[in-house]
Length: 110
Length: 113
Image 1 (cartoon, rainbow over the protein chains, first blue to last red):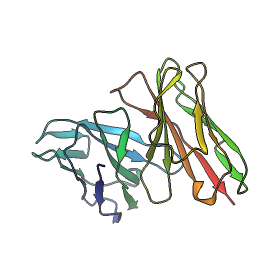
Image 2: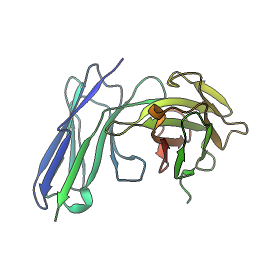
Image 3: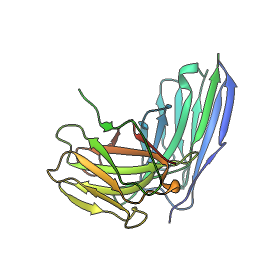
Image 4: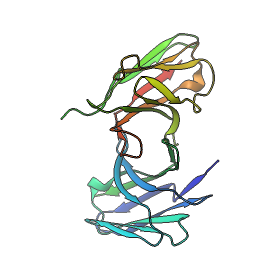
């Protein structure tokens, strides 16, 4: 059974700071996805990465996929209060179901 | 357009009671998924429908849990003889088919007292 570990579990920073959160898998990812979940809402897909070494940018968010396709990082530049939420990584493997990590709960204070 | 909707948004029930949770997927989406998210955890897969049939129910924890999708659209997750450990947020997602993005609803928060 694939296990996804995310770190840190909690992160509280001030507006304007940079941050990085991590996701590590016990096995090679098939298709890595990052989600953000706000309180009372379901997860919303941010990005999908498939190729080892791939880097994708989404405004102030940079997603990096490790060469061995077993780890990933999400870097946020100049964090804003609107970035607050639970950041989840997931693998959509050969089956249809998603396997999620426990998430990193980010709080950006104004 | 309308997203995935789930009703009720909150459900409080007593231990031992029966509950039904409803999911209305995005119109035209053939795939529908149920996940359960306990406090401090990521969502965990329960069951997946392709059309009317359950294609994978390997995540259902025991035979107290059952889900249906009789007309290939709305789905109902049914829990019999609820236990306090069933307390969680139950998320539904839909997609146009497999390997496509899954769109999640806001979830139903179930509390068993």
